[in-house]
Image 1 (cartoon, rainbow, N blue to C red):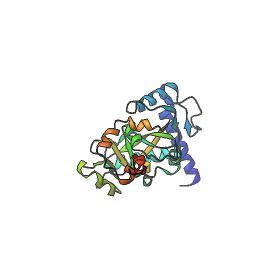
Image 2: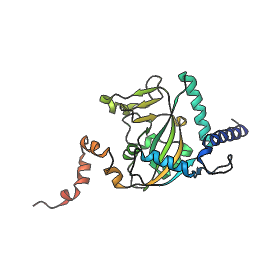
Image 3: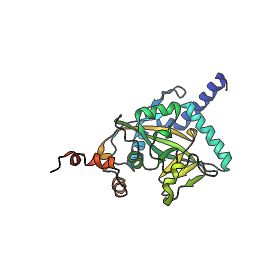
Image 4: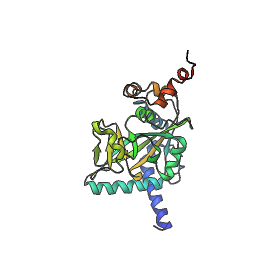
Length: 248
């Protein structure tokens, strides 16, 4: 693709994206929007409610709509390819992925890197969920950044492979989905794993500050602790004072 072709591709993608999202944004030049855009009040309230439907105690600080024409153009091309391959229209789901602010911004240049996650029991790809609380609870808990971003993404789902409940951890060896599948999914339908960056587009960035109570008050906290077999490292961390106290 020449530079002229690339420019035409980007301009066409920008026009298509603006046409699709124009009702959400404040009035601006439809061809020259910033990367992160403010929403009008109705759209802001709708997106905030979308998060709070499954993550009710999340204290949202700001919401931005992502305008990345090149990324959107590649996403739409991939959508058409999948439609042809599947023989019917693929599903376009609105799903959540939680990460740090810096990694969210990096993803707009180089995609989301599945190698940075330590939780891949449903496949070694990028995980999304239909539950914002779940996405937050199982996100990277690195203390390096307090600002978190819920990336609300359009995600293309064609053929799926459901990881059987009794074989969940076998998913860790799935580098690509088996057969003709493009997506692996948890047995309860809560987690979707994608293996191609062009099969999702980050539509919204929802910003919030990480808080311990978001984990302890999560509906997944008790369930996680019941099934959790702590390692020695975890025992030392939790009961550190006991281990450090002198023996009587």
